[in-house]
View 1 (tube, protein in one colour):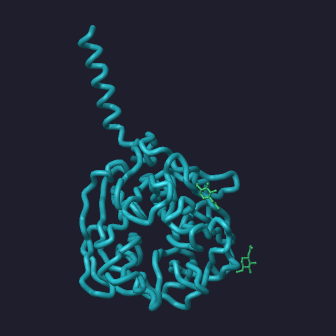
View 2 (cartoon, helix red, strand yellow):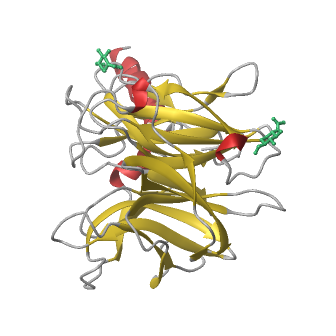
View 3 (cartoon, rainbow, N blue to C red):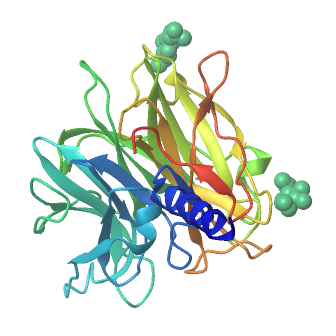
Length: 324
Ligand SMILES: *[C@@H]1O[C@H](CO)[C@@H](O)[C@H](O)[C@H]1NC(C)=O
Ligand SMILES: *[C@@H]1O[C@H](CO)[C@@H](O)[C@H](O)[C@H]1NC(C)=O
């Protein structure tokens, strides 16, 4: 009897071990800032800010990213873009993978610019330097996809009237943008804690609508949080008047402070959208490598708009993405 019971426990332990569809946060406990995940070809591909280089980690389950295969895909000796590498993200455009990232000089942050590398058929394929996207200070570049007549737009964090704002420009090619416009400025109280900031934009598509999240307030405060811009569906997306701002939509909770700089990815079966973002255990907020990577499913309100919930306590068992 005792023997059988032991076997029973063993079987149970084994079946919960092979249940890939659950995981715990954080996915990356250190240097988990500015995370971005894409699901493609049976793998999750994750990038975060690692400061001196660009790294891609892949795994077949979300929880597997904690110990996933990691490749350093880029280092650079060019003095104008060697250093302070931030916020890399993978985008699949025109039949290959591209990495959009921020980089500048070692001396200070004045040369921070959005850059793009051209890759190959999967995110582990070799990269070549492709282009710098702006000639003035800019960080956190991302691509927002629109159908004709608009086409893809580049969105990044720019300085406008001394406010760290969001800028937008149409993309004529993965490394080439047209006329720049200011898309939105940090004018609401929850966007101005510590300093007025809008950065880290990420596109979200659902139910025929296009949304853009971004991070608001200064990262060295617990008030760093996500805001939401909703496209009205008909106006030129490069015009501020075509978007409506709401927020904050994701804020500090359960010991996770300053949740922000997120990305979105689809579940393997494409039925769910997931939010990957960073937070810190430091109740004063953090802008450094102490930020860890968290992921959770996006739910939807009755009007179809996204509901980001709140960051669960670290270590909470979470059901993994559908289709794992
Ligand atoms: C900033 O965050 C702190 C801690 O979460 C909170 O108590 C405070 O009300 C927030 N301040 C503002 C102006 O939102
Ligand atoms: C969308 O925004 C544009 C301004 O860019 C405006 O002209 C248009 O009327 C708006 N459409 C809707 C459906 O609100």
